[in-house]
Length: 280
Image 1 (spheres, rainbow, N blue to C red):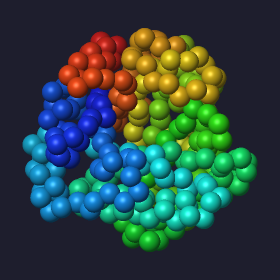
Image 2 (cartoon, helix red, strand yellow; image 1 turned 60 degrees about the horizontal axis):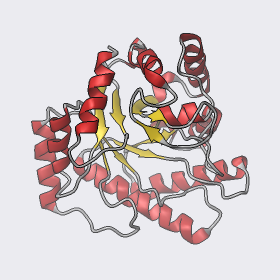
Image 3 (cartoon, rainbow, N blue to C red; image 1 turned 90 degrees about the horizontal axis):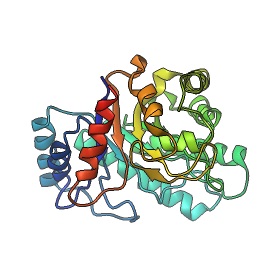
């Protein structure tokens, strides 16, 4: 079965995320290794790395991914922002290498009005510089997006372009966000629509590239191009859409994490995970 989990807070220390994922009964985890709204976060300390690795071991080494900073935009035409984005992602790769986190999840960024082709070309060039500068074999997972504004990655073909044109394609994979692809116009709710969506994904990027899922219902409808996450079964996708995915044996054993709204009590994660498991 899929390894169901959630994005959890690292408040109080990175290792605390494992306490939280255990509390909600998760089998996979996503975190921010540093504040996602800061360009120059403090480097990891030896103690942080040691505590994290110890907690990871106690968890049974559940799959873990880090989500890159929302500030990073490798598709920008602004030189200063590009240089800061490259430096930020290099540091993210360094942190994940030190912590033993194999995956960094990242949105493909925004072309800023210059057009999809120009944005994708700049993204590839920037990403290749990140790998050249870091020298780390961390796997970058390109996250599918909803298509808001000038954002890239809402079409599978755009993800495919990045993978095909990067000199480091061997290190690239895909993170599929259910809310995002649904808002981008890919059907999930019925068996025929779901099958068509996965066929398109397979033909564009290859299902073997899919390493991670974000499980989020959508506040808005199919093709709305609006990124608004909702609790499982309470949005426009509905339970049947998630059942189609969870029972797809091609994705057995893959980590699938929630990014749904929650309070400090984490009760929402517990309830959403229970709902997902009931579909199995």
